Length: 371
Image 1 (cartoon, helix red, strand yellow):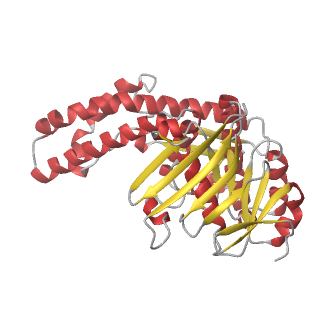
Image 2 (tube, helix red, strand yellow; image 1 turned 90 degrees about the horizontal axis):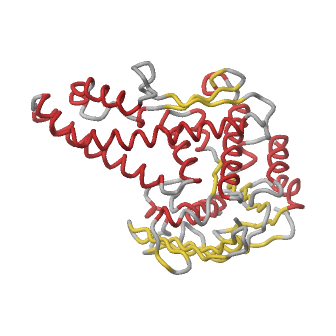
Image 3 (tube, helix red, strand yellow; image 1 turned 90 degrees about the vertical axis):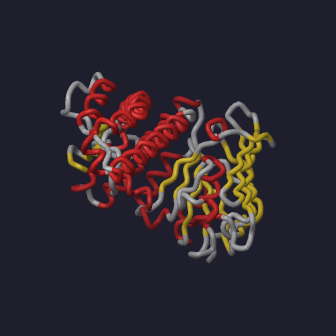
């Protein structure tokens, strides 16, 4: 899939239209000019979400009522479609060829993978970042999984509200169990789907990691359920039901749900050691890139084409050697968009790229790389 045109209005400080290169696209400019905003706009067009904020209203330019990102996408079969993502207040509208569609259908059209400083939390941060990584990996190749995750989040919210109310009112455990039982029944059914989907994507990622396309180091991941060691995890639903019953009193005391896949984690090991605790900063960055490349290859195997790859502040996160190895690997595969404030980066890698000088939100085609 290729993003051939991008037209943006009132998204952050952006305005105007750009014709995208089919391979490497370099967004060059000084800090504060809007380079990252262009990547955010592309990601919003592809996913209907922002990698910078959960409140899309924050992305609307100050003093404006709405922001629009429109793009032309050409699939591998040669078919082109116009995607439009609009933010108006707290409302998000998504359309394909002018027809409004729901998010799972919309996400079938375009996909992007983002590498930036925040994405390093997948390696360095808490379990929630690694769960999100797995869920986004699944959603990329199976967009309806968005609905599964939304249903699970809704159930947890409702159950937490009941648990909090039960704790405040001091109702008996038996009464609480009766109130919560319907929600636990739904939780068990959907949790099983999430658990197995995460297990499957971990298997697929590990299979790609053994090929070591980008790094010579041994990298492996393992999905660690919070139910491990508590019983027969092969019979996940039965075990989950048992643990929910056993931990009901603790959930009431705490006022929120303590059992389920929202408590799981992903282990990431480099050469047999925990990447979070023992890897160097360079090893951690390489590990994340390897995980993302594995996802890109899984996407291609599933969908028959590569997703977009968005890399923010490239030279701040990677040294020139890693940059060269990464871009060499991506050449001829992904349509890649990178941002940099360093003219030297554009000079080194620009001959094979489309270069855009970004100034005050405008992205202007540049044939030179002078500062």
